[in-house]
Length: 596
Image (cartoon, rainbow, N blue to C red; front, top):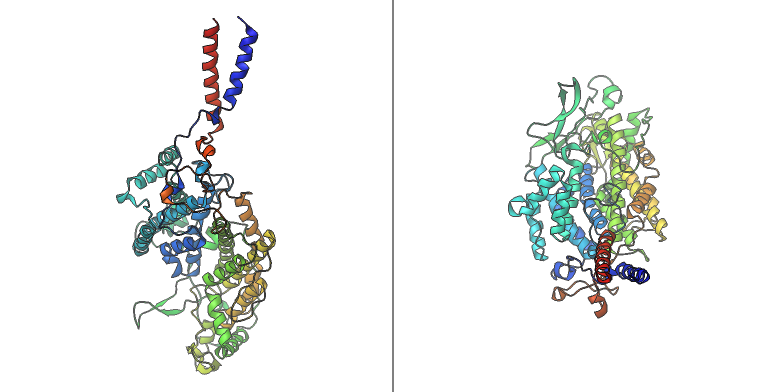
């Protein structure tokens, strides 16, 4: 036997098998985005993401600020979660690690798959939310399904209509992640399967009060007999979503004897105001403090909360007189009124700040970069809210409306209650109202001041970080820079009569540095990714076309050249090792048989 000859053949065999992945291996399957992304579906831009989110997330638009921020933030986890699965670098924002349950192959790394994943995640999460408050989102779900049908999408529907949904749920609830992986592989990594997985991940954050918000009302405050303590206990029935789990109760009382201008003791504590219910004229309710628990039970996303000091009011009468004067000025100033309304709507403020960034020259207008921008805003918004709410409940301070009404028949020259009037009016103090609705929570510190400053600081950190210019919000009044957004927002709360003076700087103080932290976390989540196959209209890469279904395409959705079309896709390193070894054994065996 010529051993030298055998050794040379062995070397040649090894060399041949080292490149076998380009010769012998073809993928088991791999979807063609031309076959999946419907021609009827609009281009995958932020416009359709917002349209889909607003259609499913109607509760956020009619809820109090904490609920609105919570629901929008939860929904905001869908697109960034979908980005992380349809990319080889980005981190899962919920775990700050690479997605571990399933590894989507590179054929899924494109903007169109990410968009389809997102709209499925919205729907699956909307189904979950509708179960937490029955009837609350049923109409929204129907409208969402109708929109998706118009877009040519056949979503995974809820249990009774789609067995895959139920199987997925069963495996998830049982912790059988291998089964979930197998199901997703069987679905050929369809974006809807990934979208549903992301929704389950997001839902698990809040199920059974895991995140402290009590979103599903699964807990209430009561006595735990086994532990002989008072605290959060399971709710048995008739559970109230987002209800308190800490035992907060308003204890403020009005001074009914003595000096009506002397606000001391329990008169300094928050007292619920009367409001008309939305069920017809003559039906009234007294406010219930919205989500008093969240400043103590919810974990911040960026850092430990900074607690503000108590205000040093020495004379509530003088403070309240200042409020009366501010409203007198506002009554005759249409610009002030417009600013009070604008800054009261945090959704408008947030959208305006984001538009001020995306309209800058040099901004990467891809869906991926825009979604990450939104997520950064979600992060700072969430923690700014928690920071303010901790102080509100800790100090539990009275609103100006309560203090002023205590003066009874005293006559005051101030806002007369009619927004359309252009002059102040002399009214009795007991009939005083702020310019707009006073929200159902205590006064100090100002949540609006905190949230608006967090928006503005994040915008500045973002534009500085990516090398853009100063973002400017355009309104009929002058807003020269981002700092002005925070200042005007805070001042507008004084002009509207919702706060005393110390509440505004206190709101600013507790969010110092938060904007920069939000930007840094956003970068950390991105993890250096350039997002394979980002699609932007007019930049050269065409969108999928159903008429091309079945033609192999590369990750950039351009038709592959003939020689590339014939080349099989890559396989994993473990598959290559296994197949190389098998082929080497086979060839060596044949060689030995031949030689002997």
